Length: 301
Image 1 (tube, rainbow, N blue to C red):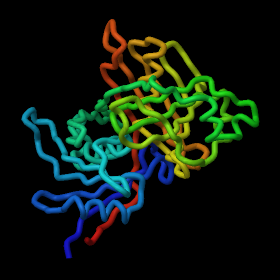
Image 2: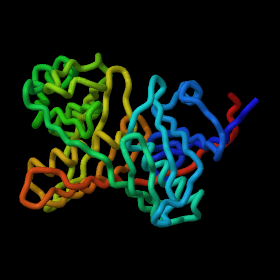
Image 3: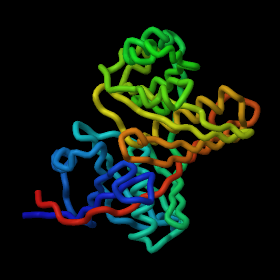
């Protein structure tokens, strides 16, 4: 019976049992694992994402690179934030003996990753789109979260943002942490995406701006998709950071995001956004965070 070695990591934290759990399965060179088998293993882990990390090789430039596939419990995705950071920390910190640079080869394209003192940064593939054809309304927010209307907590801003095609987030700014704590699980939102963008899932990303100093913000967030709450959502954080940088016309901005507090899995995410000079386009998004190993073992399939 074939078997594979695995670890689990808690991502966007340095403390075990906080952050967002990630399954990471190591695939040795010459080991044949089908897509169907990967999906079955990911379903068995039953985590928000499971990564299959193929054995690393040196690229043409001498930098180590690893082929990566990312699975949800019900399908494969080309990219996701917390698997990228968790994989980068493990590949560079453990497999490559604290190498400072590497490359993850995901279906969304190559991702350049840096590693220093237990923390990884990744230049994230992006295609930022702000949906404008049919704006998501305050009434629709209240239909999802009636407690907000009952308490008189009106949203301060509502934006429907796609960091890449297929990943869509209704970003709702709330007036206080008290309002954020009142958010509950609800039915999945019905959002009308712009023409050509009708694909993928839609989550609601609630946020509060806790501090702003020039072009740096501290925020606290929650990501809800129906009855599911995510302790850390790198892709949503990237989309929100890009939206805020564009809104304020900041050529360079840093967003320090805390998520998962209300569910007991505090996560710390950093998003660094650079806009193209003289334009309203995003040049680069760098996602940053730490991870810690929790479990390791062997899976038979």
